[in-house]
Image 1 (cartoon, one colour):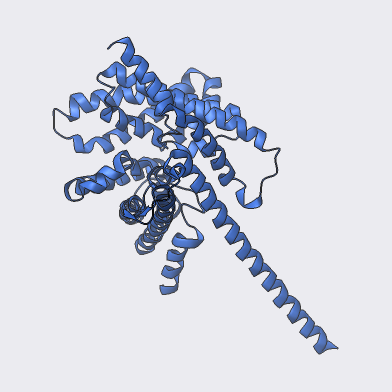
Image 2 (cartoon, one colour):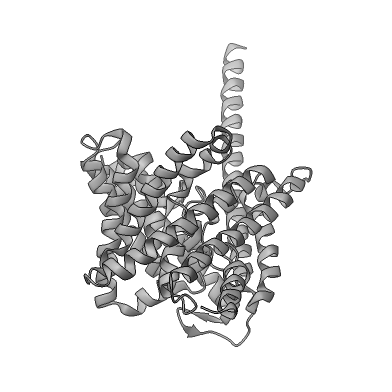
Length: 219
Length: 192
């Protein structure tokens, strides 16, 4: 169980990163990464909704008829988003304002519905909760990194603290968002291609070494 | 509602607040259904229809039911319920009325329920200063859909040409599409 939980977490954060690998939930990623703090706020909000909805959907997976499962999932997700919105409006109004209309739009975030359909509807409650946590953390991590990148280059600040006065305003605009996202995915894909080709080479080498040993033995 | 307000709504919805390139709503179909012009246009038309009818229904529901009863906090659940049922009803009607139209548009309809542009327009018309009555809300929805269609059709035209080009391996697929989107967003930047 312990190994599996670790695997699920790693899958969400790195190997199956929802933003950089699966490219789900692109709208808030592009719109909210103007500052690193937004990334943290949105990431936490999505993680909360994802864990709660995964747990409930997984618990009800044998009760919900498969014909009406999508509307049922959406209603469950919408309920948690409503709860989240009420709580944020009451206790953390600054975050609620920063997220703006993207807070209610968590309902139609493909990441949450995607995980409900691909994972929670087939797996037990605890695994689904861990999957939600991993995916949420992966989402938060990528959003925060992209937010930090755009904030440093675009405004010369990080988490609102000024570093220097050098700034490239391009990165604060919409075009900068798309540019940053493209570069991040390309770098992620490039690195993972590199790692997998290195692994393949290593395996081939090990295999041929073994073959040579066998040949020598025979000889 | 005078002519100038309508013009302002049209310009805002199509250009200065373009759903895809300015607000980043509906990015999934923008990246996913823009491989060729025909399917991009079909998606655009389907989204425009759904956005218009959504505004027509959700705006009165919010102002005449949710506000008097003081249950505004239920708006997300009510809106998503309206959109999901609307899409389902449209699909059934299309299937009965016209087979060719269903074949052309039907496959895009299920995707629209989870399109952020539709729920987004329902939320945006409530917060917009320009929209003061039902006509304003409906035209905002309609022209928002037109803006969406323009962006997605332009994108698909460029992607059709892209097939003939040789792009670096790491940039294949999403990254190169986003770079094209980046240049389109730069062009739309002048409509600030």
